[in-house]
Image (cartoon, rainbow, N blue to C red; front, side, top):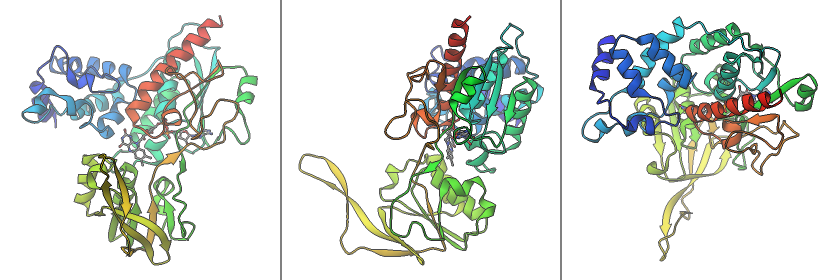
Length: 410
Ligand SMILES: Cc1cc2nc3c(=O)[nH]c(=O)nc-3n(C[C@H](O)[C@H](O)[C@H](O)COP(=O)(O)OP(=O)(O)OC[C@H]3O[C@@H](n4cnc5c(N)ncnc54)[C@H](O)[C@@H]3O)c2cc1C
């Protein structure tokens, strides 16, 4: 590993205008980090990564690098791009084991901030505020912190011990964590303000599966992907599994089901391979694991024996507009012991008192400010399902907006 990392780092051209950073949603200064690494300054490199992105170690493992840093590396035009994800991973892991975070002693300790949700958005805000000396309380509806990192992305893609390390670092910074505490049903946003929290940050993500509203959707062998991934061991999925949808969540369900004993997993998608929202990387791995794919198959109804689909095809009219149409008399049963629905998620609707859009997403400005001056939000609950790095990037802005707001009260 060490040799590979040095070899890869040495390939970096140290571009004056690095395209890798430009292609990264959080502008990771990879060329500077690589220069520090090659100069033997690993801790400095780690500090630079952590300061820019407290979830650098996570992003190094699960970012769609082909779309971001590595996809933009100039070397990729003629040969393979520098494997920046491996370099970032090596440095960040090392740094996480060494780093002892310390909160600034700057008179902010009596300023309480409530952070709701401990996914990438909430963790980012908690770190930034705690490092800046604020008194942070993190409310999480689940038992453990991490959000999708803990309860969505499977262990084989992201080892959960990393989240435990992050939890310990937050505790070291005196962040108070209240697990199993869903804000909304019992304690409201206004209850928090009553208790003198100067500001509230909402990073509650998107946890309601979107239903297909198909006949058969309530049958006993039908499950929503996001619910299954929370704890696959509590499901008995049988030998044959059908997955409806073709995003990264669908790939995670398909690959997890195979690892948990399913013998045949088929992904059914109503459009073509090129329209899949899963990254090529995720698709390639799913194929490698043995997942089968049927494209241009639209589910019509779910029955005890499996899913009935109709064929679809793309039709282009005289003006060049194309639309999906179903092919007549093409219904076919795809036999399955379990059927998973993986066609995106929406926010839960349990936070009231702030402006919410039609689709349930919280409305904010570009800094994450809601219609109430002391309530802020970012991550998936604002943007809809996106990526970890985008949630972190937005949440950095929200953390700054919170600090600016709280300072303005002095
Ligand atoms: C299965 C799956 C795989 C994915 N794979 C990738 C990937 O490989 N790479 C990538 O970059 N992105 C991936 N994503 C997307 C990425 O994980 C999300 O964009 C990111 O987690 C969003 O972070 P967040 O903090 O906004 O929300 P979340 O991670 O959803 O965290 C929200 C947290 O808030 C808690 N919460 C919710 N409501 C309340 C409440 N009322 N009170 C208290 N707590 C509450 C939740 O329990 C959760 O812990 C994936 C998503 C899924 C579902």
